[in-house]
Image (cartoon, rainbow, N blue to C red; front, side):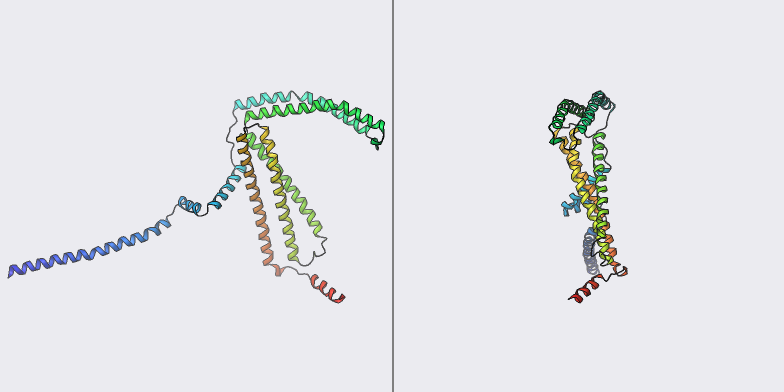
Length: 320
């Protein structure tokens, strides 16, 4: 009996150990499931910049490409260094060919003086009504005949000088600091002209605004029209100056005599830089105009109001 009792106790102990092990397994599985559930949240919290950028690119590829090109254009216009560095050998070859251009200065001075003399004779011969007098027409034609060879020589010298300057610039290269600097100078020159034209247009529009019949309806509309005049003139002339730049930069590219592929790629980069820079300027001006209009609209009740509309309506009713 004692032996049977000991065997029974051993079997009960084994069963208890088995049940305890089976009870611990579900807890371990639950912990694993909890770790799996919490791991995505922790990965999202620790998401890197590269992963976030990749997600944005996959979600909005067109918008990302537009922003990337815009930033690249501004970088090329303002901060990008020249990819080709000018070496002393290149500078020496450039100076050697530019000396040939300076050798033509004596011929230019001579032909310029002769042309000035002929121009003075023409202005003296073209008196009032010279076209109706045969003697005056004959004298004018004679002066033009003597002037034609000098003009031909001057044009030939001008063509020769342009060719020599192009050869000298070709020694430096279009992608050097000389080519990129000249393209930037052309852009900022056209921008300054466009800005000056915009200022003139704004002044004239404001002057004519003072003579409008409905100019004093109320202060809010008057201020809105001023904002519209400033923004519209700036946007119009900035777009115009950009179009002018797209044509002027072609002459800069041709002056360096690059290859077709290099010149075309340079033109695309220059146009991209110009559009990006002008687009940023236009965005700032339009944003400032919209912000000013919002501020005026919110504070409209504090601005002085005019009773002109009510006065005109009462006058019409009285006349009727």
